Image (cartoon, rainbow, N blue to C red; front, side):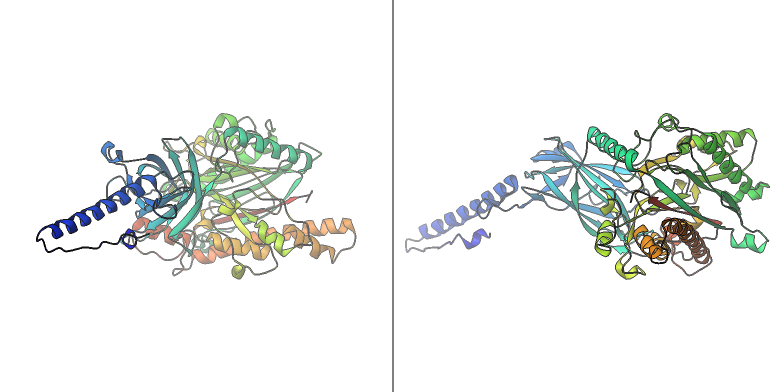
Length: 590
């Protein structure tokens, strides 16, 4: 409402000389006072009190000293967490609008010095305090905008989440993003620079524990997961020219300094086989010292496999955290070591034995174990080898196969996945689409300097490993790889290969049943098809990574990260050894 529309000022002039002018001046003064009163009350209360009662924007100031908060009706603490993936940070400016039930703020910059962006570094959490003049009420939404630094080559930003707490009421809010603003360093996708983030329900520790226990109870009664694994590895192109060849078997293989293992065992005859798998990437530069780091990576994985096969499971994972929830990240060494088949225990034991044998070299490593009864994945990751989980999009699944049984409901955070393949990018419109439900972030001291285990004094320790644990779902696909995969193939391209090579269980069952009449032949035929799918998927991912690594003009995850780190345009892939494991998850009860 414009107050000038409702206040008409009529100026009368009189013949008495000065009194008419004085009267007009008084009217103008009164009008000015009304304008001042209107503006002050609106900013203080947060509503247009002279009109409809709709919320108005309230003035807000980022607090840099005690004096700047004197006008505030409320002070909010913000914690902004940047993702841990490569290239996630930004030197650009970020501004935020808090939208509450009763009012909203003007856009305010997240800064410590006026006009100077603080720099949102990869994996960092920066705290801010803002003073708000109006009463916002319960906060429903946060509008976040990135203003990129035009002088920097890397202009994207991966925002993990924003936490907001009112110091006056102690009310806390969380806004989960887990997505890119602007150009992604994972592929060539360009996301919006503005996002509206809805408030995320924050569960207390009791609610999280209760929900986890209920899920564990259901899985103890109705869980029976089976795993099909495919593997592929290929050495660096220059090593191939020198005569190096990959050596592969069902349970162990290597190419160059890369290595992998896949082992199963069954301590419980009432369930399927427990699975453990892992990859390691030996550091090539040891060759300059006369050391073959491939011996170290292979020795470490062989000892880890031995520990798994000889170990026993003490805990059932009920104390673990869900990597797909907001409590994802890590658990302590003491908790993980309660089970001798936990990846951390396997890593610690293998590191100790290799050191005792005086094996030289160093390596990155990621180890996983999969529980068949509970469908729980445990992982320990050191360095830039890693894994991701691709999960069926339940909305697409239900709409595309109404007659077939749908897979179990995915995690509540599935809608925050970083990347979802669109229908145009899927090779089969009738096939349920998958999204990246989780990807382990790389551990790096600096660009090109990953964490690693080795014989030297500066080695990192198994206790430095990132630990993750979460529940698997029917039709999940796990991709495990060394950095030769992640540096050369984007998440978008990995999803496209999975969609092309691996069918959902409902589609596979229907196609198999049309060509096989007896149940026994159906089971054996389906097992053969599943193994063929994952083998083909692993080989295609390895071949794609190899081609991209030797393409000097291609834009790759590595070229994007190098461009940002060195502040100069970089093209092409990164030549390296490449190892890929692909695991498809199936729950027999579904």
